[in-house]
Amino acid sequence: MSNDYITFTIGKKKDIALIAHDNEKPKLIEWCQEHYGVLKQHNLYGTGTTARMITDKTGLTVKGYNSGPLGGDQQIGAKIVEGVIDFVVFFSDPLTAQPHDPDVKALMRIAQVYDIPMAINKATADFMITSMFMEEEYEHDVINFRKSIKERAENM
Image (cartoon, rainbow, N blue to C red; front, side, top):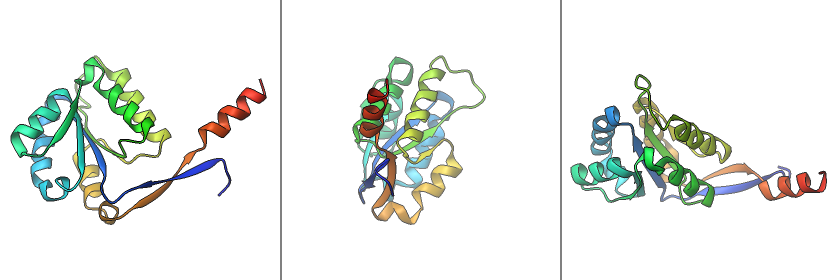
């Protein structure tokens, strides 16, 4: 592959963000209980109330950030950019308007730009958590942003 991309490796131990809109929190908690055996082997992160509820109801350790409307989605996005988060499970509510919808879209965009696996519903999360890649390293290619910025600066 050309130097337009850099290969990153998601390790065997994943750094997983767990996020859910209010109406979806019970589903995500149930999903975490169903997949406790897998999730306990990884580093878990979450937004505000979701992180707290998962910890309280499942016994899993989840590092909490702010709630979504208070910038938690943006914090998770920043951790993706920093290379800390490499897997996102976000049970979103498609039927209820969210005041922080632009933040959610920004998080989805960052996950896409950095080629990070992201589930937005239970079915996708089930496929991801049972994937053979959960137990091994996974290499993926991300745009070489430094090269891109350098070229843009030179051409301006």
